[in-house]
Length: 402
Image (cartoon, rainbow, N blue to C red; front, side, top):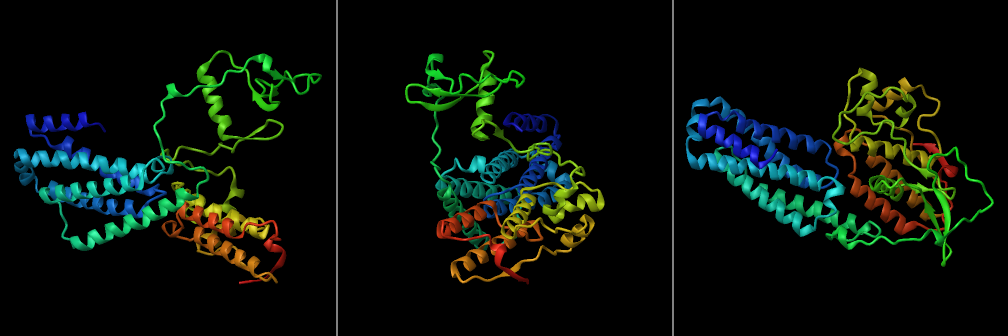
């Protein structure tokens, strides 16, 4: 929602006394901020501090609307209207800030000090407007400030550590497209490594292997019909895809994929995936009620995948799927077997994996470990123990279930 729409709503109120458009903008943004919180993956504590404030707006607006005559009188005052307009713009800025810092694609471009500064400015502006407009719910301001500082400290420390673990991560810098020069290669520099091999003409637009002269470097080539957008789209796919030695790109099955903000669909074609599915998502099958698929669902499935890798078994092998649903939705999980080894290091690794598995398959979605914390713990595990000397699999020495 643009600033022009806010100005239009303010002008409507001034000219006709109709405050509904302006109040509707506020309630719409409150709803949208709360929806962002559901899919928030990172900086949950910072997000939570802002979400609690936004929730109080719902209560304040309800009180305001019940006092219709008082509201109408307030909006006749120029300073009250100005403050309400500033409050609306602050709410919009909070929505954008929360959306940016809770998704990796955006927050990796923030500097730590920038996040802290934006958070403090937004909370100060928001709290000031709430007080002036009479929305404030009585709270211990010192306690609130203490909670804010703790939230900032915890999330920013975790963010800093997370970014430090990402191989090759660098701070974001603006780069002009004009400053990027793509190398030009003459066809005469490309040599066919298998000149006697006939091309498979039945494969549309094949990716070809060539040797780049004079340094004899292997490259991949693809033909295009002078369509620059097609070139760009293909490059983006190939840069993100893993390509085998046979030049076959390996992409995920996107049959059930969707954008994170799109509507969740009811999936019943692949019931076997229930063995890895989060309990809240299993309700789709139990009640035929669409349950939103969130990143917490993915975390749970990742935990089941780790269990499968550690114990080298399909989850709930031999159990009927209906029994699996009942088992998991009751809070039960796969067995964690005891493990013995004459190497203390192997036992430590096993215990760390068990702890991580249990942290991601917690029953309540909000109790599951955050993606960045999970990444940090796995990175630390690799850094501490990764060695060619370790002789796993762990399942080879497992003992009785516990």
